[in-house]
Length: 300
Image (tube, rainbow, N blue to C red; front, side, top):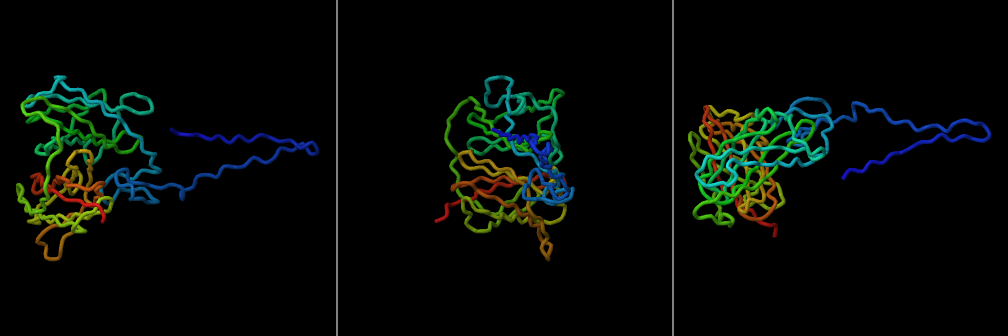
C-alpha cells in the first residue's frame, strides 16, 4: 500500500500589516539527487548514465520501487499429459491496472527468459517464449514424465523493475507422485559438450544466509564466448523447488598461465540443504550446461 501525505500551505494574514506569511519553497532536483542503478544488479550504482559493468544492462535513473507482476499461464490442451506436445501461453498482468502488459525491456538479448524444472530435477530447460501481437508469450514444450514442474519467468516490464515469477504445473501420467528430490552433494569436476569444468566454493562449506563465491574453471580457455549477452547463466534450486535463483557472473578472469578461464558467481543460499545448480557457458557456438549439487549448512 502506498501512502501519500499532502502538505497544504495556507495564506495567513496579519491584522496589523495584512501581509501573507511566506510559503515554504520546494528544493529543486539537482544532478546530485539522480542515481543510476542497474535494474538487475541493484548494488551497481552510478551518478552518471551508462551500462552495468557486470551484466551489461543500461543503468536506470532513480529506479522505481519493485512491485510483483503476476504471470497467468494457459495451456493447450488444458489437462497436461506426459510425452504430449503442449502450448504454453503467458500473460503478464500489471498489479496497479490489472491489465495485460504489452511492452517489455530486452534483458540479455531476449524479452522473456523461462526456466522449466521437474520435481525430480532430471528435466531442465532454459528457453525463450516468443512475444505475440497482444503482448502475450507462447512456447511449445513436451514434458517427458509425470509430476510437478516449476516454471520460472524472468522478464522486465517497461517502466517497472525486472521480475522473477514462479508458477507450478502438474503433468499427469504413470508414476505421478509429489515428493522433493533426494539430492546428495556432488562437486566433482564435470565434462560437458566441449568443456571440462571444475567448481571451487569460498567458503568451502557454504552457509545459509551468507555470501558464497563460486569459481568455475573452464578448460580449454580458447573459444569461450558470451551466451545470450552474459558470460554465463545460472539457476540454483533447493531440493523442494521453493528457492529458485537466477543470476549471472560477478567477475571473469584469465589466470597468468592461460590454461583456463575462471568465471565467478556470487550467491546467498537462503536455507540449509542441498541445492542443484545448473550453469551454462558457451564455447565455439556450443552451449554447455553443467550441473553441481552444493550442500549448504546453517551457521553453528
